[in-house]
Amino acid sequence: MSLLVAGTVCIDTIYTPTVHVENVLGGSCTYFAAAASFHGPVRLVAAVGEDFPLEHHRTLARFKNIDASGLEVRTGSKTFRWGGKYHDNMDRRDSLFTELNVLGEAPPRIPEQFRDSRVVFLANMHPGTQAGILKNLPKHRLVVADTMDFWINGARPELNAVLRQVHGLVLNYDEAELFTGKRNPITAAREILKLGPRFIVVKKGEHGALLIHRDGIGALPAYPAEKVVDPTGAGDTFAGGMMGALAASSATPAQLLGFDNILRALAHGTVIASFNIESFSLDRLKTLKPAELRKRYEAYCRMIRVQDSKTASKPGSPRRTRKASKRR
Image (cartoon, rainbow, N blue to C red; front, top):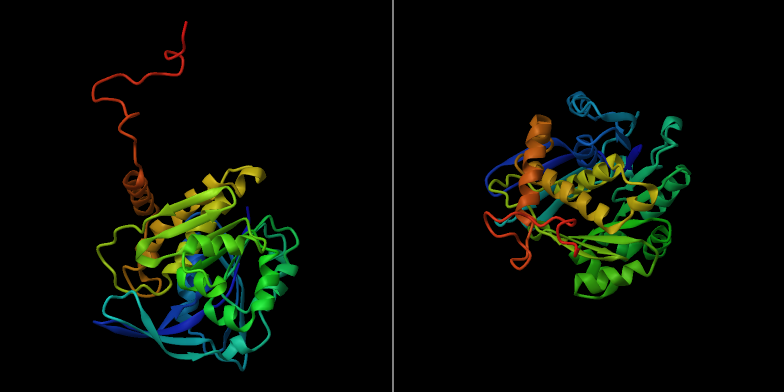
């Protein structure tokens, strides 16, 4: 099914404990679309200023499944810019500066050819903008939103209204606690479910993610990465892998929002996020081969599989088939 992401494309300056980079391509749409493109076509909707480098346009064009015709380049405007510095453990960071620029203007328009999109991801932005975008996508079947502490604190009524219209919400564990006042992420997510969504994904960074669904609870660990260069965009990459897998799913409409289907999609998101952190910006995803992604996904599935010793077949013993186990 057709997948659309609406959010930000920006220019980042990033400091890590060992190195820093300036004016690299970033933004929620950027990371999401790159990750989702490994599963199929993805439509990108965002706005940048006339200062947006040609080099960054070329980077987006390298991902053949990204349709960037929804990227508005506004004359006289400047692109959203952000700078951050990571602590030694790479798990926490401080924002050094945020220049909203084009984000302070009207939201991007939805191109006419995008209005039939069936799967929609509303990346982190003002919930009023999220609601406005959704109005222009009348054929949607699956809508998932992202949010952050700034909107939880400053736009709660609008955020509550969005939650009545979406099927899923993605947020981190600090945001889940802030939203509900509940420290336990499962308890917090259950409170949010009461507002309308079918499922909540709580991101826990290096500790993986939780799926709190109306039909059950799932937990997935992060892939045990050996190389962490830059965690920027990991959450957006995770969401892109998840939503890309859902859009490419052969599930029936009834199965699409099912617990097992969503949990499987989280595994895809987890794996591609583990590649993104290996370098700055989209540098690692630009070189990532589908075979590499598939190999790591298969390894991850083997890693998280647990078989009960009481039901596992003993070495060398034949497996009992359903037919053979029937009484005569």
